[in-house]
Length: 98
Image (tube, rainbow, N blue to C red; front, side, top):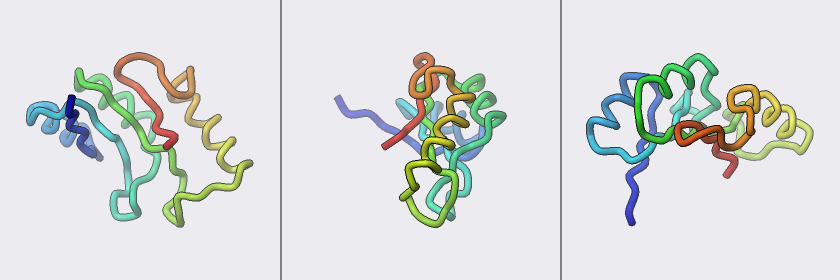
């Protein structure tokens, strides 16, 4: 089965993607930097606004996609506040660690 995943940076993007037939979203900020972890406010707003699955990128800076272990653990702990199970809370919220 083919799934259509669409990048969204705003609630408006997310709604448009859902209306356009997206199966799930990749929620990011700072698209010009390759995507950064969105704020909890944006995550909550998007999850409330759509009924499709929402993934979020876990990337605290735009320098690279490489994090030192300690920095990665701190960022994952912060993201766990967005999503209590750290990776999957329900069908709407996922953290993308890949």
